[in-house]
Image (cartoon, rainbow, N blue to C red):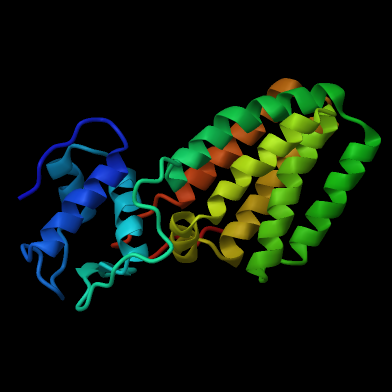
Length: 237
């Protein structure tokens, strides 16, 4: 029923196999997919790869994800709208991994070139974010501005532009759908606390600490977006 996959664009290959099984009727409307762990074993991929594939299929309307219960085949699957099946852009977790690698280096360099004006701007953004934890769109905008403000300290306009571009890939239908399950006031609070650690390391002019603080922040972000659909999201404090 399921076939192990070659290591190329794995989450899209997983989505395509499940899509074919739905279209041929092998997976019946209303039926529950096997647990994530079992799907990962059958496809010989990681559980986060399975989650990314499931997000693609939910955006297409072929499945329904019920947090704390599992994943079910939609009763009346619709054709994809506004989705690019052949899009070569990375999946949500790939994007976060790329940001982790790139922005850790940016934070490190920012700590070498930090100015009082740069820290003052970051402080204003953190204050605004603290006041917006219950307002997702505003918190998201503050989050973006925080990361681009760090790049701005370096004084390289291309680098700042690139940081904004890679951040904006999270506005894809897939990332937006994934965020709808795991993002909320509790995760914005955690992100704010992690931002403050990054800010303090940069303000102290400590490149190694700034690099590690950014790496830890974006690694934890990956972890928050990698929780199981079969369990209620963890509410950390």
